[in-house]
Amino acid sequence: MKLSKLCAAAGIACDADVNVTGFAIDNRKVAPGTVFGAFQGAQVNGEDFIPAAIESGAVAIVARPEAVVNGAIHIADDTPRRAFAALAARYFTPVPQHIVAVTGTNGKTSTVEMTRQIWRMAGERAASIGTLGVTTPDGSVSTGLTTPDIVTFLSNLSGLAREGVTHVAFEASSHGLSQFRNEGVSVEAAGFTNFSRDHLDYHADMEDYFAAKMRLFDEVVADDATAVVWMGSGDSGWNARVVQHAKARDLKIMTVGEQGENIRLTKREPTQLGQSLSVEHEGKSRTINLPLIGAYQVSNALTAAGLALASGLDAGLVWDAVARLQPVRGRLERAVIAPSGAPVYVDYAHTADALEAAIQALEPHVSGRLITVFGAGGDRDHGKRAPMGEAAAKASHVVIVTDDNPRGEDPADIRRQVLEGAPQAREIGDRREAILAAIAEAGADDIVLIAGKGHETGQIIGSGENMRVLPFDDVEVARECAAQIARGDA
Image 1 (cartoon, rainbow, N blue to C red):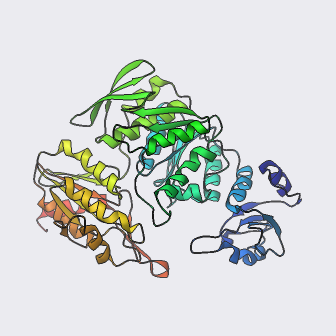
Image 2: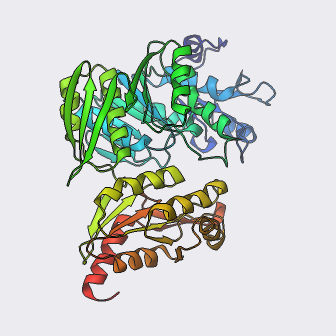
Image 3: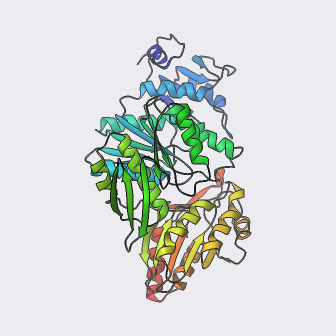
């Protein structure tokens, strides 16, 4: 494809008549004919690799006007990430006809996956992109990032379309939105789950964090898109601000929840295997037996239903599918039943709000004690650690603070900061030992919650050249510990 044609389609001034064979933001992936994106990052300046990219055959460099480019076409832009995304989106075609996105602090993964499930049960060829990887009608491939880089994102979409996928839901993280990793495709609906403290190691403050999320509604979605916004009874006001952003853009608005105007949750009752929901939609009252536990699972499921409806799916098919939703990997996933009879759940909760929500989800099912095992990640927002301890201590009968992914920090320092919010908690640094202790202590009426890592299958130790990823899957470890206890080896 000619570079001049790509530029014209993207609205970028460039009449160079050269062939483009691909796009890359890693100079090691440059081949002859590649357009290379040279961006300034927090730790690495992509402009330093311009000479290497040109030597490998890059025909054009997208970079700031002041960048030095010799031997290739310089596509200069004050926001090079945006310009690069606009060009790449014209190259990676076709894409699926129906694309929706989900943002928020917690619940993105579950909502995206539930949207995919609803589409699939309605007979559509559907996929999702996010923390769990690329989940297609035929399997899953890990990407390692909630929002992959723009080249991976667009090439994944194009590949899915070529495989016959017509519906895709993707997670839009604040990092991905601020770095223009979700650009260039027609997003017909966007969901917003909730908003609370997270990622303040990257964003300057909560307003900066929120502004990054709002790019999805302010700039990324199509002009005629639908904003699907959860409006729960206890929302702090952030979600109402999302509605204002959607109104300012003149988007269609669908509010969902106890305060929702389009999908209203009027009643929720826990059942033995899930919960019974009373929902009003389009003047009709429906009773839905959701086979998932927890209030936050209800918000995820109803937001997913809203996205499916916004994509044009028949309401009858949507509500029938909601009643058949399956648990999402690492999201209140029941890992094992302990030898004592206590169920052991694994959840990805890694913020104070998410931890509190997971605990609240389990409380109606606990007749004995709730035993919570969790830690906090290293090289991440330090300010959320003590609040996580407070959230666990407030509602759990037993709290064990352990290691999560310490990365480049001293694990003992991380645990100490968490324990400031839970001074009565027990400290067991080794995560396997902590899980073993919790399961061994649990009685028949107790429930064990292992929080923080969810679906992850490795524990990250160290950083940079010294980083190691040790095999560690909370679900598998919980099962191994339960078997060890059953053998009498604990």
